[in-house]
Image 1 (cartoon, chains in turn red, purple):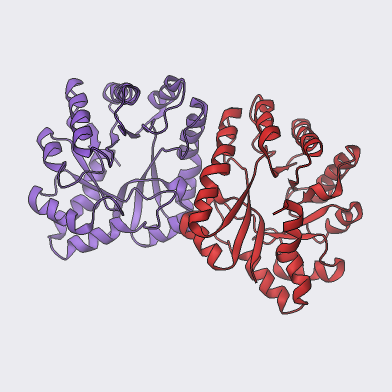
Image 2 (image 1 turned 135 degrees about the vertical axis):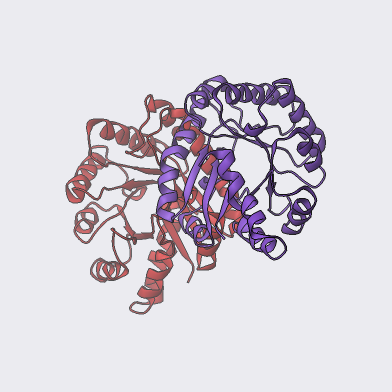
Length: 248
Length: 248
């Protein structure tokens, strides 16, 4: 079954890796903006956004893969004068991401809020990172921010969810991203989660990027789920929900 | 035999590709600065230089490869206010590259000259690109620029040389980079060149980067040369000359 990796970083992948992913059935991906060192200026991010929207999309085509770029300011990549980068996001983003909170300090909250406001006004779906550390607490902080903004349920994907955070996100009605990657969750955990909570609100992704050797985890998880569940259900998490969220 | 890829772009490679290169014997590389779309500001390049010097070097280590970063303004990547990027180069470069001429217009010449002046004053080796189009003519233009600056022979690698440009570069005494890649030269051509001109002044590289499927060409060429020539000679082009040029 074809699958849609809803959160990865194509800029960290070589062309033979992208081609291998496409051959393995991962024909569509959302490639999220991320800068691997703290950027010294908003221009660095703006050029990275432009690179994602043009060069990376072309590179995807060469590799047999549709790349949908998500642009936005990641909490670990906030440059001085970040507002300038957000103006570019406001004018250009079809998907906003990877945004979210890492340590959840005031600056991160300010930048996330500004991006959520743009997303709400411009009706753009968002890929929202939750951190490894204090995941439940920071997830709840993000949910509170969304609630305070009356943020539309269908525009937010709360990503890197775990068995512990899924129930609180489900309660609020947002989309939930399940990231199958070392240090995140396993295919078995995904199976337990969908067994309990159904397939309707979940997206699969690998978060594979600059330093990850694993890149086929979405395809592997889909195969694993197909052994246990109905095809029509697995299709939802494999690609149908993603088509709805990202409107492709 | 281990080999030294003297010009590639690690930023376009994924970690599994870097690991595969290292396993194939390519244990040391010079990773040259390049931005795949025209950068809108010098800060974009400065952050890319910093990324090469830190994040990429670390990524190389993880993959079992020593990455030596070359930083500089490529003729296709000249931002407005490029002087600011050159100040960073002046203060930080251990290798300057990829610099050179593409169309050889006035701005490219100005930027190349400024970087060569930095290299001369600060005694830093340079990796100098020659273009596909009008290669002989532009190579001669570069050699004239070097001559006008009384540029030290041992600080310049004239790269992407061909059977046609090798003799004119040899005449001037600079190092010569042979790039084995689709659209550039083949292992057979390298063999013919060293048969005629000896092994003393040549370096091997792949120029492999963002869109190249081929990444083992230096190792393949070394194996090919070992079938025809003495090991002690092949070692020169495989890594010994590179050690001298880049002082590692």
